[in-house]
Length: 520
Image (cartoon, rainbow, N blue to C red; front, side, top):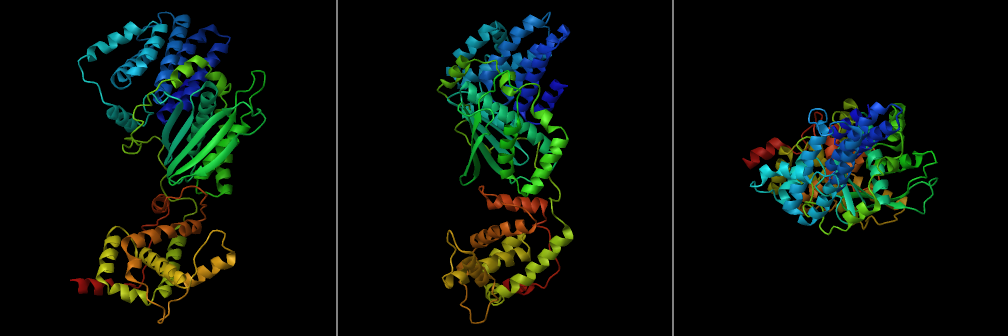
């Protein structure tokens, strides 16, 4: 059952969770009273090496594979039989590809790989597997990076150099975990990653409503933190990435029973920051996952630090001392999208969306926006430049209420600034109310006209994007202090909340037919 779960996590694009379950199977077999189960020890280790490779840890996978082969020789008769042990030869083929890639684009890694495979006596086997490809041109670094990105797996040799990096995509978010390439931090980071991937797998059956974007977590093991202490979580954000820094306790002594509650708390604190759900709604999802057995899925037999304690300090030091980075380190991710995402973002109506209520909101928008720009609209309609921009936006899917919203926001901002009402950090509620009142006041015939440059295509797009936050709040959604890329929020509103399709019958505010006749 553990190996089946490992395979399922791998197929879902969650390889570190798969590695945890494969290692748990090996550990369970080692402690089982039935000696006949010993054959599952090498199988679990070798499969875990394959999942490690799927995550991009090609050097760690080589070492773990060789450890698994030693166990294969110890616990299995005819240990290299192709029919009885196909997993050995699947990984042997992958190991040959690892060496070929290193020879092509990371020759400095070859001595370490050769030394590792020699310890298991498989150098000749790998050379025989590679012999037919001797005259085949090797792939370039860009080709290797593109191929791994297309298949949704980690880039080769992501475990080389002083910092490890693991990336994957799930539920509309690009996830990244980094850590120092030393034993305690790697075990802590992989343990957190495995738990995070299991958690995401459970949330996939729910609707966490993640904001599309990037979430990066830097993890470091901290020996000064006692096992009873929670993780130290620091949150920051740059222009387009939700960033976290976590300090996690090192492994608990073997005589202590593991307590995953602090790890789970750190999981929730990070993951909820990417959700548009309210705290109450998100925690309701968490309770549902716990009712479905999440707690037992997070802790599979023993803590991750024990399950994965195969590599030594020297192994990690040798990887950290490699001077070349992961393959494709200089190529940004996202240029090549995976051909298929096993855990895509949820589709269908979003939480809190009701079509009838959404249409009522659109009616209210028409009623509220028209008075704000009732004298501006005729001037805009008579402007050929504006008509061209508006026609183009309508062809892209903008409804009249989108145009009115952007125009009203542009006019309102201009009017507020004309009255020297500008938002500033630390504004009092009274000052914010005065700004809002100026922006939403009905337009009078004697109000100074808003200049045409306030309604350029770029300005209209900007003002509509700025209004997306208000629209999200109208559906009961929560915007947390993370990088809010307007297009990401608009994509959620469009995909899940009818933002680009909902409209009602209304009087044409622009008199488009007259404008078209005039243009013709």
